[in-house]
Length: 259
Image 1 (cartoon, rainbow, N blue to C red):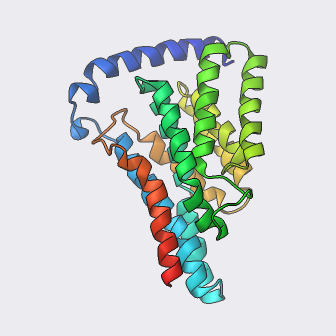
Image 2 (tube, helix red, strand yellow):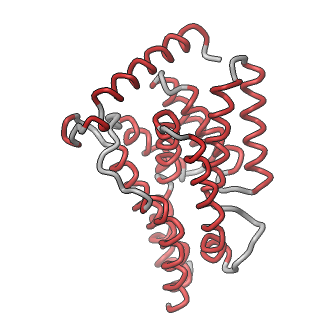
Image 3 (cartoon, rainbow, N blue to C red):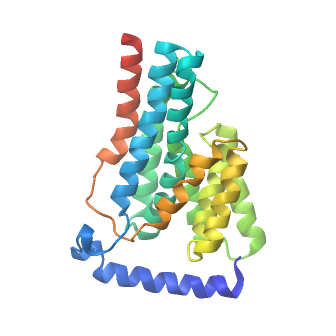
């Protein structure tokens, strides 16, 4: 899809990944060995951002309403939350490229999509079951499936577009968080992974498409963060990185009832 330069970039990417596998974090490279941010550090930024965003929905709004004196706080917290999805999308691409077991990776995303749905519905809609929207794990799972299919079958431009569109429509029909555009965002990160300038352009265009208002600004702030990724995994968070999503939603909902 990206032509000759894309193929050359892909060969370069494969060489980089092979070198990383031989001398990267799997070989015990320390976090301080390279400048920049590790995958774990990016993940922690996304987790904090997401927690602040969901706190605004579940705690600030119910406790204080959206009166003028607290509306600014609410908007500021929601703005901070715009960092989470683009960082998670970037890390999903990295995880797809480096995982040893993609089937297990996809199964894990689907598992947490299912068990996170009730906490998500409680926080987002105030009830245990809602067809209005599904949590972001569904979006990430679909996006991973799209990348997998593109790797195996997406050699031509038409087929590549069809696979991406099918994944986007699946997210749209499911009403998954960020929907069609969320899947497209991750797909562009994957397709332009070897070309930083094209990737930045894709991130910028998608930020404006997803948030055609001032909220695109904090979304765009994720670009310099992901640009600082140094290729290292960092200290592993294990399954806690997954459990954080349903657990923090459950805790926030419990606090909102108490308030």
